[in-house]
Length: 348
Image (cartoon, rainbow, N blue to C red; front, side, top):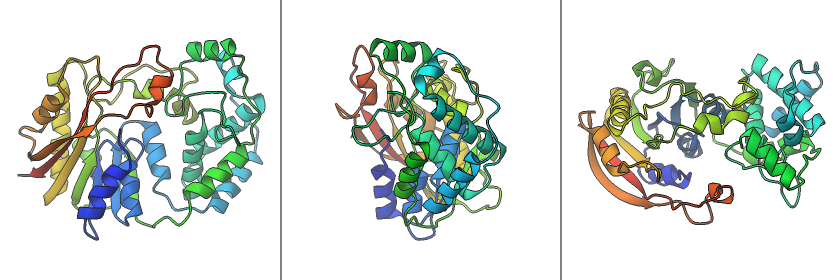
């Protein structure tokens, strides 16, 4: 829904050398990585620890050799103190794989201050769960979705009904392949990712740089979409969270009503405007989910009223393409994705 081609095209065609890029809902860091590929400095903010860890891994500078050396160094250290137990964990990971992951988990929680460790953490998060490959393994888990973690009760039933058992994959080999793929010849543009709530004005001020942003390219949570943290519970566990699904809603936009959601989002746009140049552009990709009776276009336009931003253009961005939606492979009843919109606004 937010492919890298979207921010890449905008920044490649319109940004100038030296422009600064902001994403107040950075998610997996797509905008920030696009900026890096074009040699532009960027700043990403998100309230999810998983999102920030993934974004940070896309902004550091490290070689594949440095990442692999750090991984080997960690594995040569002490044994892990905490290894989760239970049906889910027995079926999700081979015992030796789970032991290895717990070593990495404890070591990276204790110290993740260097570029190779930040990159290693991001690589592990990306490979923590996913589908089995026909050639060589790319993920550490039993058969799983790639972008979200299945809930334990459903997963154990799914695996047992199909006789699926976790494989003893070579964790270091997977890390090495991913390091070689992702950390080759990247531009050295500076980027920063911060764990914070963009509704708070101070969240959008980089600590070491008071420069103003020229571009804001983002895709905020859709109204009613509150499951990001529960859907990322396995990655959240790796970052130090509980070994169970956490359904708490913390530091997220209010979803109690369309008006409350719009007001929360308006606060973000006000905060964003305060750190942008007078000529800055705000580009928002926004949509909705089928079980909420609220028009996405009305919501996003309402959020921009009295925010310091004036809508310049709006056009349809299409919808998630049939056959490309991972959810369709796991939902009992498929639904049609709603249309999405690209909205451009300028400061006034």
